[in-house]
Length: 102
Ligand code: TYC
Image (tube, protein in one colour):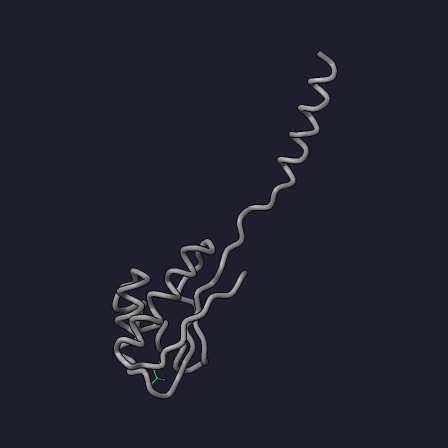
């Protein structure tokens, strides 16, 4: 039927306009107090990195002030930030972990 066909194509046009879900970078920030070894362990424990990759990222943050731990959907990124921040506070370190939309 002509009417149904028309409304179907309107729905289709609206559907194809929906945006993909946003992605977020999770970043570590440098500070003067958190031990290097602690940051390396955080990257291994919460981001599944090898010892070698963790050390590379930790040194990049130490030298440049900031580094990317990974890119995730909003909920996953927010959970990583919470877990890393909680773990750092439990160990009395000021390590800062934040998320930023791409
Ligand atoms: N700058 C710290 C130190 O010299 C090490 C460090 C690296 C801290 C990365 C935080 O995100 C960080 N002990």
